[in-house]
Amino acid sequence: MSAPVIAPPAYHHLLRSVYGYETFRAGQEAIIAHVAAGGDAFVVMPTGIGKSMCYQLPAMCRPGVGVVISPLIALMHNQVEELRAKGVRAACLNSSLTPMEARDVEQRLLAGQLDLLYVAPERAVTPRFLELLEGVSIALFAIDEAHCVSQWGHDFRPEYMQLHVLAERHPNVPRIALTATADRVTRGDIVERLRLDRAQQFETSVNRPNIHYAVAAKDEPRQQLLRYLRERHPADSGLVYCQTRDRVEKTAEFLVKHGFPGVPYHAGLDAETRRRHQGLFERQEHVVLVATVAFGMGINRPDVRFVAHLDLPTSVEAYYQETGRAGRDGLPADAWMVYGLADIVTVRRRIADNGADEHRKMVEHRKLESLLGYCESTRCRRQVLLEYFGERMADACGNCDTCVQPVASWDGTIAAQKALSAVFRTNQRYGVAYLVDVLLGNASERIARNGHDRIKTFGVGADIPKAQWQSIFRQLVAGGWLQVDLGEYGTLSLTARGRALLKGEESLTLRSETVAAKQPAKRPTRSAPESTVPEEDRSLFEALRQTRRRLASENGVPAYVICHDTTLIDLARQRPHTAFDLKSIYGLGEAKITRYGEAFLEIIAENAKTAPFANAVSWTEGDL
Image (cartoon, rainbow, N blue to C red; front, side, top):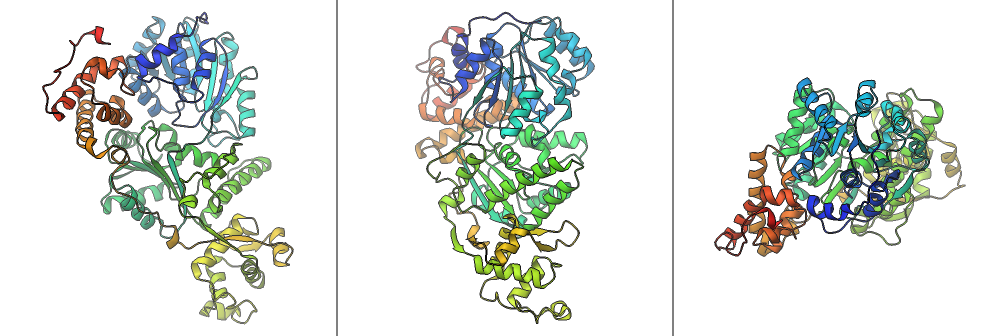
């Protein structure tokens, strides 16, 4: 059953009264107005810019319930918690509910007592749920993480393929599909499979200026991570991504051993352990969660201060999706990654073994090559990222490692030819470590036994340090001059492009770097929120944070559900005295003012050494 269209100006009032914001972020208002008026939309908007508001507000403006298709149970519960804290009638239907809880949600749905209902794609297309919707006034359908419908996306999920049934059964109900990242091919797939050919397409900048991007050569990655955390995030919460369960477990154990509260999360853990570990990450202020990449979309926490990759992701889209979990509150955050030649071998082997057809494998190899180009670039990393998604940025960002510490480049043609010659003259049967020893002239027993201490290239690279040779080989593989055998030994062989370079038909510019040069630059160890608060406001900020922690514990919700750090910063800066004053605080809507405002005002008054509510009007609904 479709809902009649009504005039949408209510979204301006709801922005202030529900969310506590005075203005929309870039691109939000046009999307909200279009969908609230009954139009279909396809939205590409990065994580942390406010995608969820683009369907939540229209759903509240229109009669009926907004049905949100969301892929992860944990994410649903987090979003429902936040909406309820704002006074929105929200619920979810998923396998984590008891039969009695599910019946209660269904009864509220049929009675018109819900503004938003979150469901998993598997449930959304079942005959029972589709029949349930026939008796309901529906405000809109929102399909979140829409890239999951595309076989070319980084997180394809077959159940998303059936969601076109919603358009067929409810042709007059507006639909909005949203994703943070999608290249041109993926976008076309989304539009086709979800029957959104008539939808208006909206795209905002993918730039996240508050995130600092950095990539380093991998060399004892756990030790690198430890140094990085000690220097940049000694008291912050963040994510560490690894490709395998074993690496997740060992990295978490390593962090705990060295004084960081690391907890593992991967599919091999039982459901109760996963719930407990995710709960720790969601509800405690200083936790480092070490996860396989599948965990990414289940995170709703806005104050993740860093995302670290100890292994190479599979594509730029996957990397951008995962790093997008950092700094969703708009405060400074980091995306830090280490990678090496072995990572390239691992990802290529995974592509070779995934059972896909040759065309799909070719696409995946090209996506990997784009990611390698990002890793090895000497240019501003943000410019490289934006260009991948079709966006240009004229000036370097000043907030990535290559901007802060510019990377020197050099004419590496001769050095590359020496490396390629070593590969050729050893019959293309050896890996990097052996070849570097040959170039350096290290006459090991194995090299002598093979007679490679007598070939022309033995010792010709003694003037270049070992770390630099490793970098050269990594860049030659990343650039397609060498290929790595996907067998057990990772032997190198020349490509057609490599043969042309060896013959002098090409020239080559390389990065000039060493592992030591790529350690993170030190900065004050104060956490990101505190670093943005003036010295005179920090004691109040900390007192407000303690109060938020207490309120969260009393209400059984994560601290960010009470309010974000940006709200605490605004409270410390403005120091409101009355309930009416709280209406000007960023992120405090009417429901939160009613529930938590008095506690914050008391702390502010105590901090100022004045009597609580000395200038306050009486606390009534009229204040709001």
